[in-house]
Image (cartoon, rainbow, N blue to C red; front, side):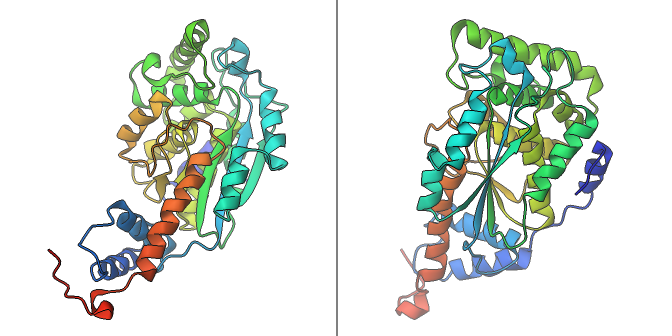
Length: 338
């Protein structure tokens, strides 16, 4: 995609395909005959149906999971909103490329293909308290970059991010989209407290107040308050929907980026599951607004797509049960279970 204007992105929301109800129904029919009480596997059953609906096949498969982690820097970091300086983003990326990050270990465990995308780390976004974070073309190009990360043949796409101050940007996005106060959405992120947390909340409030009048929709909110990596995540979410690839979102920042799509069209995230509920307090509030329930709740707040990849374990277990369990007829057991 070569997007130059956000109006081109807006047009894509009218073209989003639906899932395959027939594939989901076929999965549900098999689940009804497996040797267990109806609904006994709870959300595992729901997850298999979700995979089938968006892959368009029954049973679904998990042979080619892809993990895409986008990294970006934010000008607002200069306001002291993080426990770490902006150069740490590049250091985190280098560690991930070298195989030393947490997500590398989890990807090895679940045989997931990890790709890390650097988003102009030497050119951070503008400080959104003083100016729009991105120009329109810059934002559109970042969205297009994320779209290009979605390749044919992927069975499921796990999305995550790296970037000092991106929880500040995420809080600002949520505050602008869903209202409330800066305090409602702004948490410790990398571990800030006291004066640093107060600076972070003040930056979120100032940024939203400054740009409120210039934002006619969620894409303008993203342009004014977001970041390169957050725009790329939105692009990946859109491209995956167009290709009917199910998506697993990571924590607060990733879900906030995806929430831009929800704000444009409430069913735009039907192909997305949320891998985990972050300990960042704004994430639970955001999930309620989106009507989403995370697969896992492990008090994670690392980013890097760690929670999204961990959720692959639940997806694999769900699929293994669906395809490997015997039916009542195969086991010679009565279908009536007390």
